[in-house]
Length: 401
Image 1 (cartoon, rainbow, N blue to C red):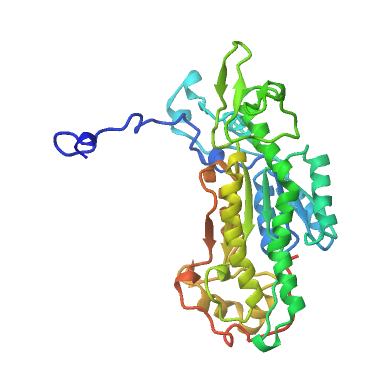
Image 2: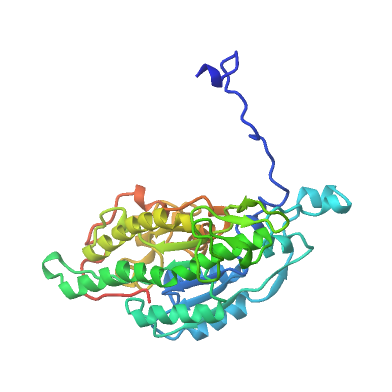
């Protein structure tokens, strides 16, 4: 230990420990930017999925929502409401107290939003699209999503939000095997195989961003393992090398954290605790999805694809409608949560779930993978409801689709 301390037993300084990143690289507009990202959200026509879609479109992303029902009107409404507009970025110290070239933001990140943020105004142009009759438990629906993204998203997906899911609530003695299996199928199996279906497009996202940041074409990319040139169908190996065309040497790829894709699985606080309601298949499916996320995060890190969970608590949605109607929104919020507005507990809102997803999809969350962000108003640290308080048992299955 003595070799790591000064004579006064203080830790020795670490090289570059006080390094200051370029001005603008830590600005909110850059750090949390999802502008121009291609985002797929399943179950995006209502409830939490619709909230998440609004957040991404509001911040300039291209969003595809897949749903069982026709959501074209909702998608058009999002585009019209949050579409092309111009806003000024927050004022910075440099812009007020510096002159000439020194007044401009010196942003290290070379993506389009960072360049735009250095201008006087920032144009945000989010768009939302929809696919109806989507049931991700069916292979043909997963294939339709991929085909659409290949055509309209230029064969690249930056972020997949696995939100589609369903629930089944019945007394233990009345649990139905078919319904139990259907919940597991949609909430776990279908999520996995949609990731599998879109994996090449998620890999392309990281690949494109590496090339963009190094100002190179795909022809300049060399796989050290097999020495074959890369095309759009190949994937990123663990260690990438780029040929510096000005010399005959090889140089490491800029492995900046921004060159990554993001998968966000919407799980539930009920996958982390034992709820009062008898939703055995639902809570088992969410617990399984939590562990699946960790496994995928470990596997896909080599391709610069991050996989995380967002575990929401009580939000106003179709899945919660029966409980809200039986208990009442105010009573439900008071029983479940400890956080709210002006000391009064409430249910979740758009900003709550959007903030978590934007964090995980952006540069701000670039060093997170395999983790769970809990958005529950503090319900995990509050005594849960009993089955009677939650409205008892019901045998209807409600879907987030």
